[in-house]
Amino acid sequence: MGRRRSSAAIAWAVLAWLAFPASASAHGIVGKADLPIPAWLFSWTAVVVLIVSFVALSTLWTTPRLQGARARRLFAVRPRFELIGNAIGLGLFVLVVYSGLAGAQVPSANFCVPFIYVIFWVGLPVASVLFGDVFQIFNPWRSAARLLGLVTRRGGGARWKYPSRLGVWPAVAVLIGFGWLELVYVPADRERPSTLGWLSIGYFVVMVLGILAFGVEDWEAGADGFSVYFNLLSRLAALTWRDGVAYLRAPLSGLAKLEPRPGTVGLICAIIGTTTFDGASNGAYWRDVEPSLDSMWQSLGFGQTPAGELAYSVGLAFFIVLIAAIYHVGVRGMHGVSSRYGTAELTRTFAHTLAPIGFAYVFAHYFSYLIWQSQEIGYLVSDPLGNGANLFGTAGAQIDYGIVSFAAIWYVQVATLVAGHVGGLALAHDRALVLYSDVDEATRSQYWMLAVMVAFTSFGLWLLSAVGT
View 1: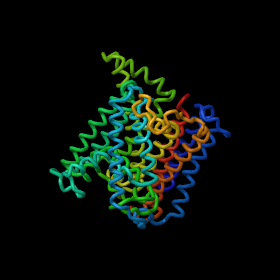
View 2 (view 1 turned 90 degrees about the vertical axis):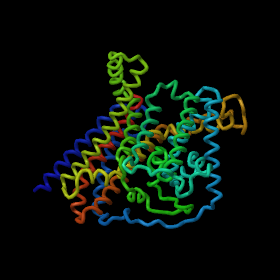
View 3 (view 1 turned 60 degrees about the vertical axis):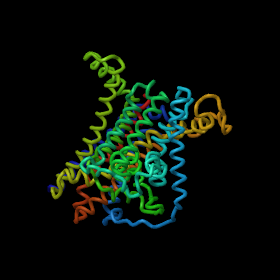
View 4 (view 1 turned 180 degrees about the vertical axis):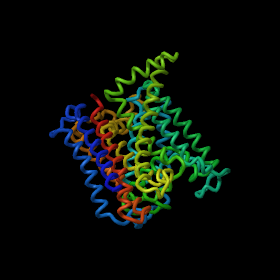
């Protein structure tokens, strides 16, 4: 009888979320993407796919497959190729900084701006999911520290031990800080090449000093926000690298072996929440709320610019907290199904299941931005300073906005969101099979995670439909 009441409660929760995408379709997806079929149908279909996937997993996936998956050796990479990657990473960093400081202070004419915001911030996450953790090869501060000869491969030059209680919280602060720079800081300043140049130098210095003090592996795994971020996403990949050797593994199995540390949940919630706010801040709802927040801060004595930044800061913090709250609702639901494990342990144990959703949000939100704006590098590499040079003969090239249609963009966005959430379901189901000896109990524990995934899918589709309306 208790099982029936639990199932009924989850069913009602799912039905409530099923109703949500239908209302989202009224916000102009069709007008924006010119879809050949109604947008609401996509929304319903996406949620149905999640439910069907859950049923299939609970029926066909009865033993853990990801937790103990083994990797197969593919090939070894010679040390000189790693050295070449180190040199390329350092060279690009020098070019980014030099163009930012010495080039034209026009974002669209300076190599620094699109490289940081497009190639580094959006392109590298995609590359990490496709090819594994490639950033460790091109990481300029790691290469610089090693060039100094003060840090060995094993981090033997470290003076202090990295505090384990910090976990990845410093990395969380870095990612939120970069999100604040991109989304909150005054547009004229955050896109000024010299601002990005000096910030790049500052971050470089802090990272090199941190590596020298605590060792390359420990510092990068906890305090370097970008290394932690790219490594997390690389765990989705089928390709992984260890000691110069490439291995093939089951997709998602790298996440199943992720060891949760202090701040891991906050890291993933920050990734999803920052991207969510980026989408929401371009929609009609934020345009209705933001003026009231502005007025509130101005009434407290803040000027127009800081009041606007504070309003956006509140929005950014709100969405990060909202994502964390939705996840914790699912965790508490799991605990209610079986009290064998405490909520704190469940929170840590299932944190990795949010990583595919984090990437799905990032890729879906930035896909068109990456496809279009990455083309700027093609002509800026010939004129990185914006002074009229034409080093490689490509300075006259232009962005081709017809390279992909709006409808195709929407298809990719929806497919990515659904795939990410199905991946999250698969990870959660696999981990439940490890924790609970009884398959039925493991399946029941995941009713709440299904509700969480449906909520995130609906929320993601709403964001896609709300932007530009």
